[in-house]
Length: 262
Image (cartoon, rainbow, N blue to C red; front, side, top):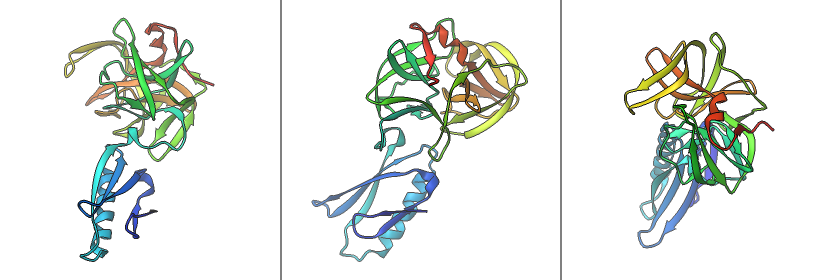
């Protein structure tokens, strides 16, 4: 457990895996302490923090300020450094790999992730580009940070370096990260070609399907990889498996987009 000193002299404990960023302020008009928590979408951090705050509140005298908590998405949490990495929250989706488009850098994710956040990993987002020919890939330009050839591959501030790109093929075991289902893996079972996703009424092509379902809503755009090689991003899933868009098709995005590998 990590101990965080509270604004009223007690301590709040949060699980190390929750990665909760906290801030606190005193509201003199209401004689209350408001804690802002930037939390993961899986809800674990919320539950941990709520329990901790309840424990602290129970220790306070009736004359002490009351404590309330407001929650913000961890994608906009205060950053201790200006490094920009893949695998972070991209609105309702997950960022894939850091890429370059000419002299600009940005994040590669799924094209169907149409809600562009104001910030990604602390950087401001700007122009976004999608791949042609029904390939589910998007590049969103970023400013304000230092792009790194790293991506989050497990919850708990775990990052991995990417130094090459690979070709998806049937029989290969690949690993993925998504903000919903975390770190999972599966063997590539088949090439599926063009698939229509009825919930968004979109058809995407050049897709591969895994042998098991290893992703869910919110994982879209997240990285598929093996060791230090980037292979693709998550497009979707059904009960039989997850769908991967190979990273090779970023060539279909205008401007010669490439994965940052150094």
